Length: 335
Image (cartoon, rainbow, N blue to C red):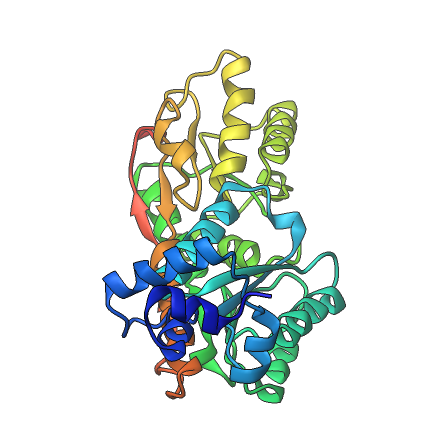
């Protein structure tokens, strides 16, 4: 069996140098790194990763927990891509764990990553409560960061966006454009993001002295199909509406198809807006007015905090919250 000593002899370096290369250390010169890689290829050496992990208690890996029902949307594919890219820049391997369909499944996924000795873990929770997440943070030495959820007692372990404020920004803009009869397509029930966006919308209307018509509140589940169904319901009610605000861009684009199929013009006959600033909205015609969610900055902040913590530093403070930014395009007309 080929050993690390064989690789070192072939490359003309010490065993320690080979070990540093295998562990992703930056202290090895690039020419030596290439010699080690060539020696590994020529000798057919296959490092025993598990043995190395047990010996060093380090894996150079980072875990990410997301429930599988969220995988298909562009927001989450972008988040996963950014997490992988940012982990790579920090010379960490990203391990994705499926949170499946319950709080217990999410807890088990975190447990699996802990068993694999991940140096740090990112959790985008759907089912676990803030209280349960804080308990997990307290129980384990491995640093854990929660994305898109506020944690009352462990604020520096959370990276999130102020969805309520973002919704206020968008609703103020629509009111400034003269819209008073605004329909809202809500996100999946129980989603903290969706609840905050709906609350920001309703509270802004109330502050402007506008009583919201319950018939203008429509159910959605974040998918384009649910936006399509909601828009069908809205047209069937034959209500006086000038604008539709959907809780994400996917639902807004699903709704747009219903209006366009009905011979309506967007935005001349029906204005339309969303949240998240997904790529498809930029190239939709007319380009979608939305709220930009800084997912790249959020992931960079989360991984930066985790890398610092995994190296023995204290988790940076204060809490890391981000603000949405209004993106005005072509899909909203002035009334």
